[in-house]
Image (cartoon, rainbow, N blue to C red; front, side, top):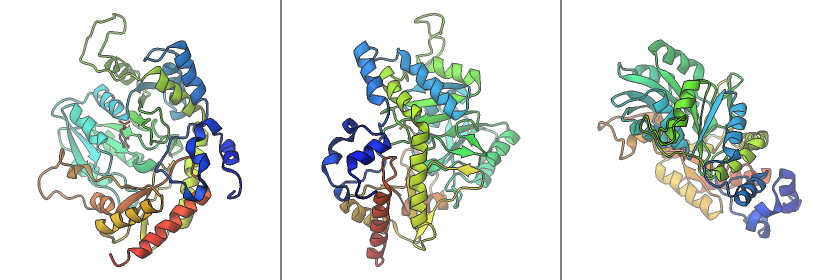
Length: 401
Ligand SMILES: *Cc1c(COP(=O)(O)O)cnc(C)c1O
């Protein structure tokens, strides 16, 4: 594998020479490893060319619906509504599920800020709960304890791709008459109990940001089996226009439409869905074979019902200070390895900071000591070996921190 020319390996992976870019010039050992680069290995270029040559570059054209149908199929749901970001998908899903000002929605503290922002866009209040130390996902016991008479729903984030404990969360939601929305922005292709994420709650939101598992540049999708949710999302993404009367607006909506060009990229990505999923899973298996059980590292672990498509392989440095974590990240950066800190918990963000002294210890510890490693679909086994060797060296070099 190591001696095979880069061109050949890229060709095997399905990547065109055109898409390979300047990386071809550099030897692999010097190559900078990005955290999660898009893998544009299918019909992306051909479909985008079709948009440009036909001048269908705005939100009308053949790719929007084709992308929605293909994505609904891989999620095992009836309806999919494409929008221009994952944040927009969350916002519309919450509105379609009836969230209004004054409501409370339970969200994990350990997530990207957009999960909580979408709740605030609706005038509702995000109520933050802690993570469960094994899975890093929201702790069902903490969710049950956070329910109040104002609670209307729960957002289950599948953090870094690992599915949340949906059976238990669904039981809590049922008992209290709450909706269960999946924030699947990081989890395309993961499964729980044999079913794809996106098909497990009342609705789900996906992101197609450049660094996510599948990408359209920027983009998102609302998926649901409920036709009313899909219809509401369709109206709201288009300024609340009455579908039968042009320029007649029955409710306050938004311009959250996805362009035909972005949908063209999305369709090409979904056509190679299994390839993307398999590459990410193979990466994670390689990482785990090298890192699992290491005394200096804490990894997340999925329960027996979960099959994970890992978005970003993430580890926490057991017992480390944040200064040491940052030092490890700086050493890796100098070795040409891009990393990211685990998301600072949202309840600590300036825009959401709750009452002083509110602590969510697991989320805070993982955020203080965690980092994400290069995880893109194009990563090779020997590049993963290089990352792990550099990580081990950096851990050893920072022991006195
Ligand atoms: C990326 C992400 C979003 C937002 O998606 P955008 O497409 O960037 O708007 C929402 N939730 C989570 C958990 C994410 O990782």
